[in-house]
Image (cartoon, rainbow, N blue to C red; front, side, top):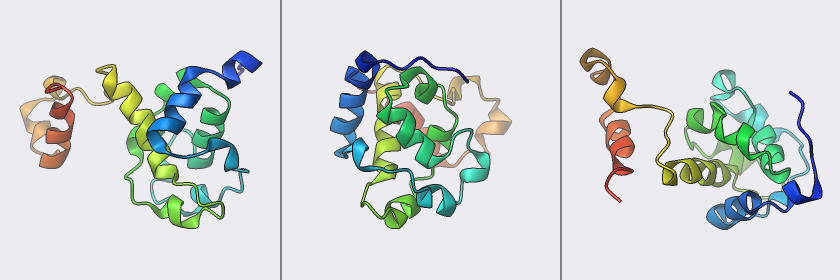
Length: 135
């Protein structure tokens, strides 16, 4: 993947919004990889938790918002516990999900699921998915 970086991209409102929603300073991360090493969902992710932080630091909005990893994260908080700098990485990932959900975009389109598939989805996931339509 080839991406052009610029000073403008690093000061993009997207970076500010992720920091504001998550309450985290993205620049504290020095990419040790401990979050990714402990993540139980990492096998299903297209980009690793530490890469999510790096992409956010660099303002790579399109790549992050298109990522499968932000939806795979189970918010188990293992990454938060393992981070030597005390960054709450799960909150950063949740902030990125919130940015998409506020645009009424989601990884799963419940209305497109077959009735037989809906039976396999945990009820809380369905409720969460429909929640975005109530605001």
